[in-house]
Image (cartoon, rainbow, N blue to C red; front, side, top):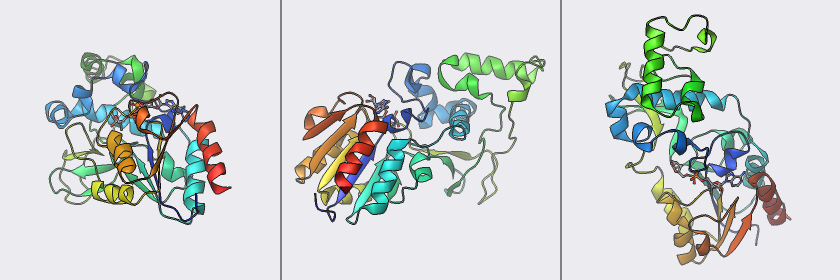
Length: 276
Ligand code: APR
């Protein structure tokens, strides 16, 4: 392919799996340990903001414990060296692409490290917990907790001082959920696109897909639209399409070429071939 061609790359949770972040739909994935309806919808937030905050606070805290892997680094290298147009569209809410150095990047499902004030509508960078409640990450991160009751009973225990020395060092409290723009208290939500909400930057993504010569999908199961439909848009516009994943995705038949293996091996190999 000419080094001036236009490339659009879609990434999903599989690219961050080898960094130590859980995917969603694996047997030990996030959606096995949590019900989507409890933590990833606007209705869940309206019903039980504390639970939703705890889920995302734990995931935000986890970012501090992981590093970009060889796949993120290879895409950052491609971004830096590719002379044509290039856009990395990630469904991931982690910050591993940018920490690897990628610049031409869009987060279509939002970012863990951003907040959105429901009082004034501003969006802004956010560090640390967003919940005014205490969080013990291992209780809400992964399989150790799968139900709301367990989180609530932990909260009760904490409130009654019933923890003793056990786990006290792991407690983190914030006590503040204040908008840095309008100063409203308790109105900041994670700037994450939940089920039923419109992904970000769709116009820019569609425009890039319309002019793409090559569309590459990496580490995504193809279960969630509109991202799952990008391959068909790219096909329709005449782009060549490539899937790199651990296993065939739900839309694998739509790709011209498929490479199955670990992202940390397959992505650097593909980038090296492309850059020559
Ligand atoms: N290398 C490559 N692919 C991998 C690896 C790996 N090391 N590990 C897992 N995978 C693949 C899995 O085989 C699976 O097909 O990554 C894919 C991850 O799929 P999902 O867990 O469904 O994640 P994703 O496609 O990003 O989910 C899309 O769903 O719940 C929402 O908003 C959430 O953005 C997310 C969206």
